[in-house]
Image 1 (spheres, one colour):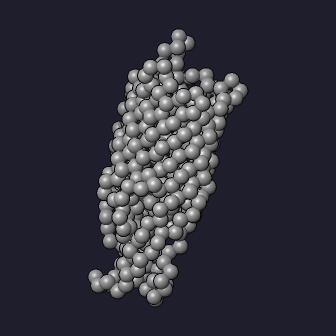
Image 2 (cartoon, rainbow, N blue to C red):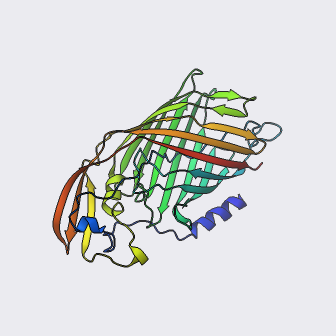
Length: 336
């Protein structure tokens, strides 16, 4: 408990800048747009990255005592993700993330997680977001049914180019039932910050164990659905917020922003194929999650350009979507 308190107190002392809606800077407009080129910023390929934490299973049950009693313990982890993707949607560029984290798992089922995502695209890494989760995990009865309730708080940098950069937090309910031959799951989420969004994931999976349970592979197919108010906020405040050279204004009094039409409509956003691979030895667990995302239902976007507060041009665009493959690799060390 003393370690946990120190971690939480340290986290509260971190001054992470949360994102408030702001007008785009005057140095944020590409010259081609001002000159009348109707081709806006290119969209770089990406895929869905869920907010679900990387789960590693320890075959030697290192979180229990010799008598089999579950004990509270600390876990340290670090994950690398080749791109930051959410519901099949991507930012203006590839955002590779390295995310170190610390978790404390209580024997009564509660768990706290603190992580920091570093965007390593630039020569020197910069913080993309801080995330604090508090969850309760339970598996009543014969253990085939597993469930968790999670409350999360996000602190994104105002320089973040993530499509979720205006989200502030979420409440999540994740549950599944293992029938032996198949394990269906339902994940529900309510997210606040850039408006209020509702999301859900429906999945089917089956775990295959090897090497006496030390190695397991879990093929999974899932469908993600939800509203897109967060995406509307991304287009309005971040999509066209491009850094100028030396951070000096390039185009005075020019503002460009996008609005996602019908952002509050609940619809299918993407399908995913993935096969998490976990391997554990001693207190260390390794994981690799290859994912292939197939986004659907591209959004209609109204792009507006203004000069000195007056609208000079509007354009309707259809979102450009493409299938994407991305990879996540993680390491977790479990303390008894």
